Structures are given as C-alpha cells and as structure tokens.
View 1: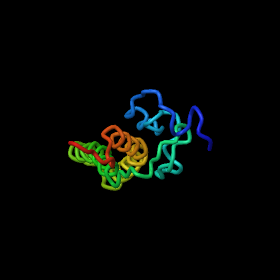
View 2: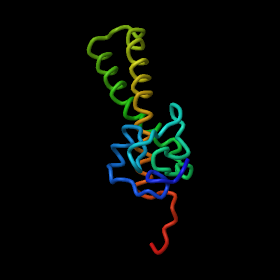
View 3: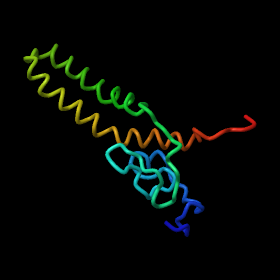
Length: 130
C-alpha cells in the first residue's frame, strides 16, 4: 500500500463517527470497511490507513446489545404470557429466535459505535497536562 492522497498522512474529511460506526465503516474516514469478518476488526483502514490495533472494545458492545435486545423480548413475552397464557413451547418458539436475531443483527453496529466512541474520546492515547 503506497502513501498517497489516501495514505496514512491524508487528513480525512470530517464525518460523524457514530454514523460511520453504525454503518460498519471506518469512523476516521467513513470509507473503508471496519470488519474483516463478522466481528473481527481490520488492523488498518484500507482507505485512510488508520491503525485499529490500539483500540479494544472488549465485551462492552455485547453487554449493551444483550440489554437492548433482551429487554423488549422479555417484557413482551411476560406481557403475552400474562394476558393470553399461551403454552410455554409457543413462547420459546417465538422469543428465542427473536432475541437471537436481534442480538446478531445489532452486534456489528454496536461494536462499530463503541469503536467510534473510543476514537472520538481518544481512548488509548496518553493525555499529558490534564
């Protein structure tokens, strides 16, 4: 990879990093893909050369996704169980795929937002004089 107008020294256009994270794009430039696999973050952005190796979201995204996906499904299932008393197998037949689908669908954008927030708040960089 050569350092040209899109190389590591190129100043990216100002974009909303949260939106780029939701779209699973590089929060630095908004162009390059953020993932090399389902949840494996690329080492460097292929568009701007930003180094993602120093960023680590850990399990933060998973915790938020579990709460965001789990709460409506659990409270919805509780409401349906109390109001209509369906058999438990019917509740499991609906609730388990729903929570699994929501969790898998929200994980990539959730992790992208966590990375974007780390970048915006300059996490992992030493702050001198503060």
